[in-house]
Length: 366
Image (cartoon, rainbow, N blue to C red; front, side, top):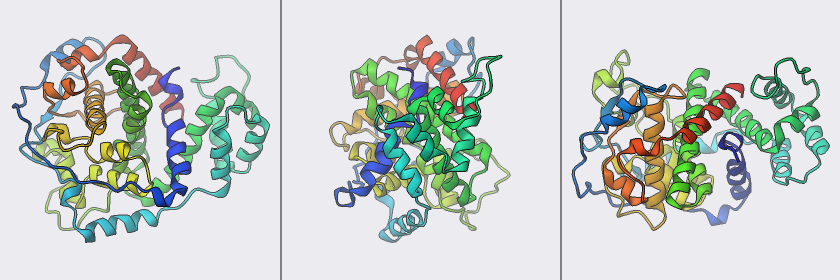
């Protein structure tokens, strides 16, 4: 099954709407020990750029060493900071009752499509988006008649993609209401998250690890970027300068500007949503391999963190979704943690590129 058909949908709705009601089973975000890697990080893999630039990849990227500029992690939060972030999460708008019923209905692949369309039609924004995507170049062959009915649009798209569109419509409204990100920036973040989920899923298959967990963790790894607190007025940095010009890694720059970075915010948000500990901790520590070993992570989490960090590295290098041209150094031991080969160039193949291209088309359509 194509990753382009499942990103941003199936697992997210199970996570957000099924687990959210079980408030008593919350997984607390655990702190971990942070130690430097046992072996020094090598020069970054220049051969990957040389090989891939012949296809569609970037000719240059900025490489940051997080051992020189360590970002904050959840261990560094004071109780007051933690409570302030949680207060912000509680203020977010919740999905409507219709959206909740529709998300539950869509979990049943045998559900009546007419019942789904009847419920979807009660939301004019969702109805318009379903018709828009069904009539896009991604779904409608050249010369085919335009789709004018919500029911027909749902039949063309399938429940998986309807779930995807429903989630993005709901979530985008919550994000847009924050006023912190412009629409173009939001779309780039959506695309990058989708790309990392694709790559993480493929790497998990290669490594013989749970594919579903990897897809979900990849999809959510940067969720904190959507919910970073407003910029501090006294951060003391000229916003006319880019992270490259400041020579500060972007994740550390977030600490200076917002007081916290997307790892901390994302990890706490996933904990607030009562997601499984593997997902919570992977989101909270997905840059950890660039400045620490993974010995402090629970069994099963270290492998997931390694997978997502490699997938994130690959996607920033490929640049399918206009990601920032930056990388954080990774050592060979990160690949060894999950039994994958190093250099990382060996992990980028035609099937991965093909799936990323499909995902890019779907993101553009949505």
